[in-house]
Image 1 (cartoon, rainbow, N blue to C red):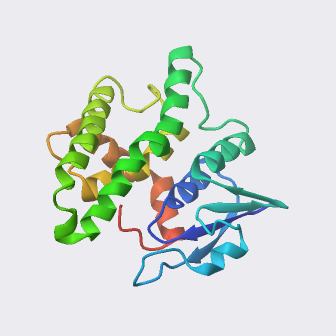
Image 2: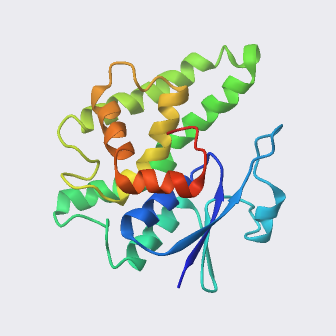
Length: 208
């Protein structure tokens, strides 16, 4: 059965397209554009799910939302491909980064986005939020100094989940400053054939 991905431009849902390419599940894309003034999702997405958010996927009569839940669902649907590695410590890291991406890393990045759009009014708050983000980025840099991927020695769904916040951090929060391990990780994921294929399916993506 073909999975339908309700994909919003320049959003978290790009990760879902990438994940589907990695695991080889059949899918089709229904693409939505943001409002040019507000940059919010269009009202059509509310017909898919009352929250009107992306990503959302349809698999038969199931509607699944929230990126982490969608990614976990796709791991199961693909018989465990890109799921937890075999070693206990790697499993714990996998679970951590699968949820850390949205639970801890994205909130200050979203605040920074709002602050940047406030212009001069947001300027007094910016250094404090940047310090919070730097704490995350410095820790992540140290994590990747000992291994290539977030869970361990192999690429997993945890890396897929971490892609959007770190791409956003490079664009708006100074990730590239003296953080060679993080920038090398971004280069590695962007070089993957499945990542490139997902970009072709999803359309223009500013964070790549």
